[in-house]
Image (cartoon, rainbow over all chains, first blue to last red):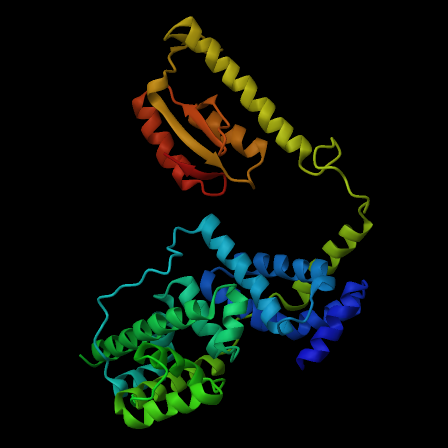
Length: 184
Length: 203
């Protein structure tokens, strides 16, 4: 569904049209759930957050002004709710500080082989901080531009470039190390 | 990187991700593509990133709430619509959460008063069961309660741990709890820190 179609559904939802809400939910539910669930490892918690996200979408449909795409707006709500959950319930580091010890270039051929192994990829994504992982996931699952990711996370574009730079570095090192270990 | 390059090496490395997902445009795209063409390491990283993206997009989506989730949403929307829509002042006794807040404040006052009288009597106080014990300011813990915690949650937790509220809320919402002795304080602190559903911070 195109952005204009989703925006029309939001317009109908603002007038209380529940059929439009059902259509909107069916279109957006799976990617939103994947985005939330990938960071939590608990489908029940993820389902509760997703419920809150769609309730917010229903309540605030009339406030969508079209300054971003609908997808960016929806993922922005999902991002805030997921990060709030981490702040409230999880003992995780939500700062942008990174481990500066990773500074040499990994072997690209080894990384390529490792990136094709789902198990290695999942393990290495799990090692990233939630906000770094979100940037990579929005880029690779949703094919967002860095500008859209910045709107979603409500941070400057430079912050997203920095997060992606460090996330990419850590991912490639992790993948290279996993492949090397697997060969020993 | 060429001499007329506008992007730093770090920026080019970051933008590789957006070349891999094919969203990079204009001058930035041209510059990153030129850097990749000139540097085999960057070219290798780009291939690894493309493989990563392909693998992630090919992953099966985890089972989502689907129709059940929609039914739950429609039920809650129906309930919201059925509820009165007249705005209620936040300090009105009919406002949502008013009685919860009032109950927590009242409970805090009663317990604080009880503890205060305990202090003024001296170091010893008698529990309803007749057992002699003492609550002193030496065995205190400062906590912030979660905004989601109900009065019932807080009461049950404090009774379980034999803690009393002796001060608070402070300007930033901190309460001071007192335990009967040092060992009880240490044990209570561990439990409080593990109850993130009720306690935001405890120290």
